[in-house]
Image 1 (cartoon, one colour):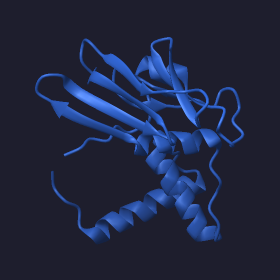
Image 2 (tube, one colour; image 1 turned 30 degrees about the vertical axis):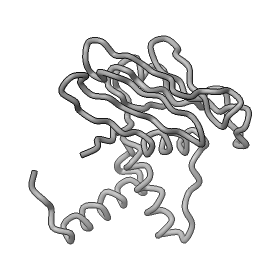
Image 3 (cartoon, rainbow, N blue to C red; image 1 turned 135 degrees about the horizontal axis):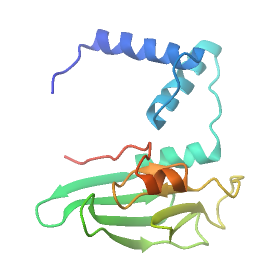
Image 4 (cartoon, rainbow, N blue to C red; image 1 turned 120 degrees about the horizontal axis):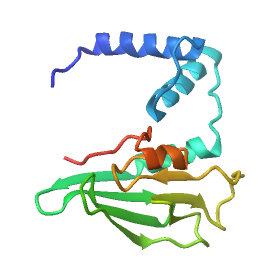
Length: 165
């Protein structure tokens, strides 16, 4: 993998940000949406506020750690909020196993299995105003987080899987 010079990277980032902000391009990933909001903040002097669902999506992506192993395929561990912990063994393989280490509806977030996806929803201790559809869906098939059950089931999730070295 070749490295892009810093100046080329900055030019590309600024161009992408300008395209996103002007509406010529649309954000396809949480990273592009974050970039767009940051660029808006630089241009306007204030950042656009993200919805509770977008904030949760970012938190899920940031709390994802996947490792490739010889014996068990890819193992993804998720840490969300103060206490939610779960993992997926053999992500992308033939025998995915979901392990809920800690999920309690009295905490800030908890997770359940629904229609083949892991759904992360706000718990009783969460102070944010979530709508009913504002959960985040994680696919055991590919380990990616998405905004909707349909994206999760179709494997078209936009979240990024974080790999450890």
